[in-house]
Length: 331
Image (cartoon, rainbow, N blue to C red; front, side, top):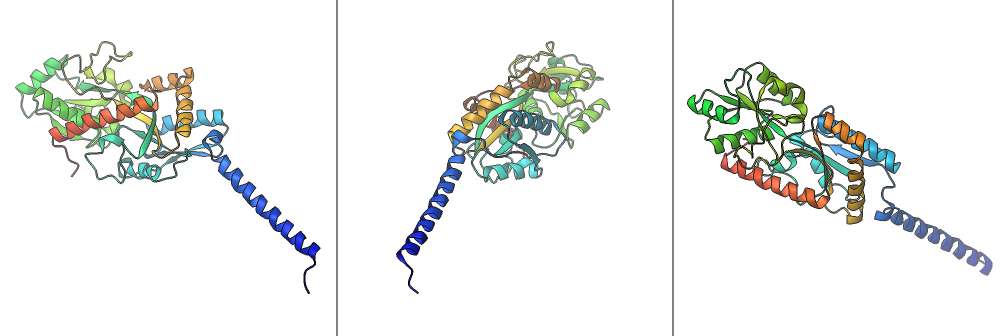
């Protein structure tokens, strides 16, 4: 039976309507993903370290504030392993749409000369901002007969091979800073690595170490127990005004400090980067956020992506030079 003209036109009309709906749905989906509509779906923070530490706590604080502001779910997913490279690689190789975010630390750039990485930290990520900065404090054991850096250097030189400097692991900030102290001051402090900051502080309190570079944030409550010889960075800490910077005391390349930061995949559209950055900076200016960060012994961040990119490059160069000059290897 041949179709009538009316049934044929009805069939064409239905097909046209269906095609139109498909096109409109496709247009709507595409429009929904434009930077102007961002964010319109859940955002995931990848933390490449275990839950419970300062990195995790800061990430969850930022996620909660963004969720409240944007009315979108912002979840934190811990992806520990391989020194943070598993989680970082997931973000570097993931979709560059602003919905998968890396919350990392300064180890991201320290690892460049130390490990064969599956990504380039300076090319495969778009820096957003540092959430917080953590200075290091050079501390001496309370039993050592020294009161300042000069006396400590003199003591170590007068007793070759007898003194040590601890760190919270090979290749960490504390390790690199201790190696730099040996290089610049002509010392022979023996490096003693521990598995984390807590065991390092315990060893210091137990008199098993002569000295250590302690993370100011995680060690804040314990610092009064030690003799504090200097701090990293370019300015004295507001809560340790009596402790001079190492730069003040003639040492170089101690400007870098530890940091906790937000990064997106490098190919993320600039309007999305700008929107994410503006929101991050707004949050980091909130009084309650700054109060929480400072209570952790940290300095609130909040610079622009361009400024943070310069910090990353400068830090990477300084740490690479220390690693080269001190012949540090993880093998």
